[in-house]
Image (cartoon, helix red, strand yellow):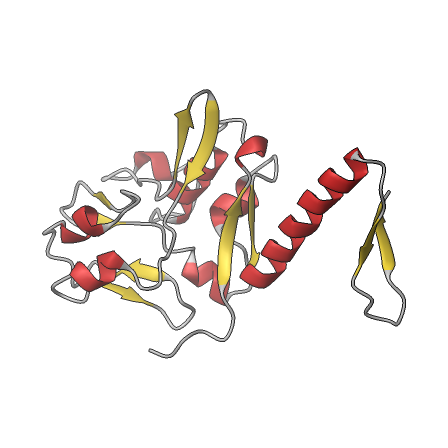
Amino acid sequence: MAQPLEEFLIYVYPSRCVGCKSCEIACAVEHSLSKSIYTSIFEEPRPKPRTSVVVTDGIYVPMRCMHCDPAPCVKSCPTGSMHKTDEGFVISDPSKCIGCRTCLLACPFGHPSYSRVGKVIKCDHCVDRFRAGLPPACVEACPTGALRFGRAEDLLMEEKRRRALELITGMGGVIYEKASSGFPSLIGR
């Protein structure tokens, strides 16, 4: 598999997370058979979210797969079930998974989990939604904007701007954005 042309990621703002777990519910529903919040709760086995909200020192943090490159879970998988898609997302193919759990041991973030049917499940960045031009279900469901999805370059530039704006405006300064039309544009005062 060749390197993806663009890297996409889910950017997490822990300061915006209120612990509502909408992301967990949306994830479970998206990975259910019915894709319906009303009927998925009656499915057996009950759909399990591939993301989780953990509380650390009173701060809620949405945790999901980091889609590492290189991914230790991919390297450790003896069957090739754990693999990278052309988009660069790490996913698990349940038809190849033998339930050995080596990927669980290899993941430095403790992300993959073991399902009731003896297979490993993990965040797949909602790759089918991505291919349809939609954001991951967890991002779409987040009411506070704690989760953002997009091109890594764009999200990191947005975060740099936000932090610079926070820093400079606190000191009474002005920030100018890179000039794309010949003149810099004001983004903060």
